[in-house]
Structures are given as structure tokens and as C-alpha cells.
Length: 325
Ligand SMILES: Nc1nc2c(ncn2[C@@H]2O[C@H](COP(=O)(O)OP(=O)(O)OP(=O)(O)O)[C@@H](O)[C@H]2O)c(=O)[nH]1
Image: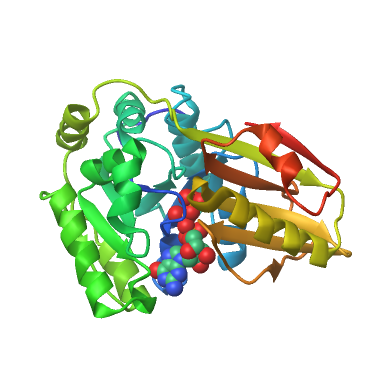
């Protein structure tokens, strides 16, 4: 399928936001809302385990999700993204469905938006694009100060959606809005406790021609797309016992401290397949995932300034392989 001037092209929402700041959750809140049937999603993960795609697929059965699995999309400037859009449109047409009103592109938590916007510009498709960034009110300004990726994401956004306010107090919530507005005075800020309403406001869409949003990003972010301070590891376990695995994770958290940024993936333990998710040192309760889901097992761990050898010092000693990604 190629570009067709007669076709109706959906609005594109480029959804950015730092690691664990709530991008997938915002999409899940959106697709659970009746009336969003004409949404398609493209997911890009920095690790090789597609957890986000899996969660969205289980969030609504049969939901149209495409995955960009060639590493971080902002680092691999090629035709993957335009092709994913065209394929999603073609599949929809072939299935005889209503045209998409919107396609949400969930970028990896370390992607910088500028190269992605550039690759959208090069499609030749008349795409109306809105850049959204989630801003985690629990992580706040410290995180953004430490990582240029987080600054680039917020600077590029037309809309900043403050996440996790449903479990924050009023002070944390209003501080997050102020910090977001300070970083990007041009952005509309969505700060809403009700998650359904938050998703509605987020994807209501402030439409700007792609070129003007691109020029904002280009000013803030002149050249590179390297993630200099981050390390991404894929850990493959040999069916550890649950007690041992949870102790290992607790010790990992203690060992890394604030160098641990994001942990997520699927691990087989005692005959079950478990979803493990953590942002910094805070972990969700483990969730059993049905075996039918065709996703590779393994835990993606994103850190700052950590070496592969560090994992061998974590107790208890488990049988594992560490791959640097
Ligand atoms: N209560 C609450 N929890 C949230 C919210 N947003 C995210 N979370 C939780 O925060 C964790 C990370 O959320 P995700 O939606 O996976 O974050 P993400 O930005 O997609 O993560 P990456 O793709 O790894 O960068 C999960 O445990 C979510 O359940 C929110 O608005 N409210």
C-alpha cells in the first residue's frame, strides 16, 4: 500500500514521555472508553520484549496494534514508522472497517521526538500530528533535570498530560503542573484526576501543522539521538522460584538505588508466566499473564551508569543470562 491523495488520513498522536511515566496506561484508559473504536496504535519499545503491545492487546481484544521492534525508533531512522502506518491503514481497509480517526504512536520512554517527527514528515502523507507527552507527577523535576531525553519530550509537546494524579495529593499535582508549564510554556497542560476524562482531554487533540511543531523541537534539540547515560539489559532467567526471584528484584533495587529507571517483562516462575513492572524502585504487584500471548519471556531493565557485570553481584545467585541491548 502506498500514499494515496484520495484517502482520508487519520490524526496522528505522537505519544512521548519518560520511562514509566504512563504512556501505555493513558492508551489503555483511552481504548477502554466506548467510542474509541476508530483508534489504531503503533508501539515502540526500547527493549526487545513488547510488553506495551501485549498490554494493549489484552486491554481490548482484537484492538489494532502494530509494533516497531527494531529498537528505539528515534535511533533507527528508517522507513519502519511510515511503513507501520501504511500497513495499519491497509489492514483496516482490507478488513472493511471504518477508517481510523486517529493513530497513536507510543514511542519508547527514551525516544526523542525530533527524529520521529522528521520521519513522519518524510512520508509524503498529509498527516496532522499532535505531540503529547506524559509527565509523571511522582517523579517530577528531578528526573527531567537528569535526562535530556525527558526535557526533549516535554519541550516538543503541544499537550502535556500529568499522570498518576489520581493517587497524588493536591500539592504534588499542582507542583507537577507548574513544573511542566515551566519546561514548556507553549503546551496545554492536562491535569485531571479522573482517568477516563484525562484520556478524553488528551486525545481531544490540539491540531497543529506538523511543520510548526517540528520547528519547536528542532530549536531545542539540535542534533543527536544517542542515549548516552542509559543502559538497556535483557535478562533471561531459567524458571526461578518466585521467592528467589522476588528477593533478587528487591536486592537489585537496593543495589541500583536511583540508577534503576525501569523494569518490565515476562518471567516464568513455578509454571506461571508473570508480568513484572517497576518504575524506579516501585513495583506493581506481579500479574499472571495467560500463556496464549505470543511474547518472548525476559526482563528488560533500563538503568543509568550500570555495567553488565553488576548483575552477577545480586543475591541470590540465579541462573540467568544478561544481554546488553
Ligand atoms: N494510578 C496510576 N498509575 C499509573 C498511571 N500511569 C501509569 N501508572 C502506573 O505506572 C507504571 C508505568 O506505567 P506505564 O503506562 O507502563 O508507563 P509507560 O510510560 O508506558 O512506560 P514505558 O513504556 O516503559 O516508558 C505502571 O505500573 C502503571 O500502572 C496513572 O495515571 N495512575
